Length: 140
Length: 252
Image 1 (cartoon, rainbow over the protein chains, first blue to last red):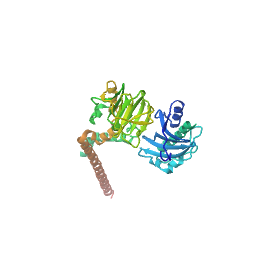
Image 2 (cartoon, helix red, strand yellow):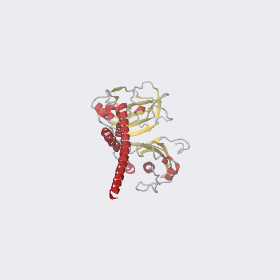
Image 3 (cartoon, chains in turn red, green):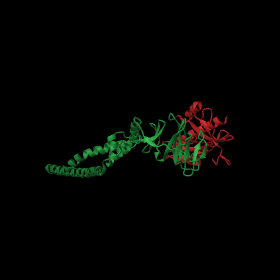
Image 4 (cartoon, each protein chain N blue to C red):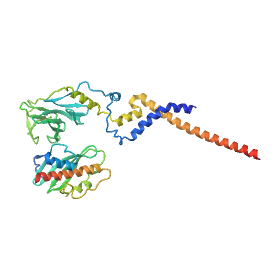
């Protein structure tokens, strides 16, 4: 949070993942949303999302800072799997900086895979698309 | 002759070790590490039995129950971190389940609304959950007690006095039977069971000793088999040499 908001951290807000929003989330993740709502923090046109998605067996908790409909920063907060830990490092997460989504909720540029960490890479890629979609949802 | 008898004695063990060994080689394909043993006889070898009494928190007919490492909301398993479970409470439309470091909010129909990590901030450990006389839920830490706003976005400090904690009660049937089966059927994977059968550990010290003995017999069989084969080869060559000599003598 301190990386995203230099002064005061804003109060959290809630976005309900039901109805049409829930359907879009299902399309992005490939499954129903894990929860009915998600918490986020917003100041002006910048939002922060802490999202989770299962890599192979365990959830990967990832933080996203989104502004002007682009990813500003990605940080893997908790990695629970025994393999695929390479996704925590900047050489991988920096690929997401500046990424946007198109009308099909896909990233505007592909993300390079890491051999042996495909499932983790895919999970974080899905989460990045989700963060961008949710950001658009709350700022438009 | 003794090689034959050892072979006969070891045949059953060889079959036993081969079958379990082959199955273990296909652990991933058969998903043996994802399927759990449900057979009560096999589970009883591990000392796993159906619990006599199951106790849970009764939230106006919605039960939150801890069994082993699993936490259940009615019959649905919702967490494998039951060791961190503190308690549960209910508001008009939300079931709150508190752990040491997070709370889970469920709708009354069992749908997860939200998982809130570190709800009180600063990694403060939750020690108690309860309800006040005015119906509002409360979370306590070692330092203070807090009550949430209706959306669980913010927490307000409040006096601990008057916070009532729900006691554990015996879970009634048929839920008790469902939970019992779920608990028993989610403890030992088939991979674990096969490894223990293969190594003989399932049957204790005697089982391990028998497997070691069988393995020793197999080693003896291999060595004796090779020795016998070399002897026969040597004897066959000697016999051929002698026959060739005899034929040479006859012709000369």
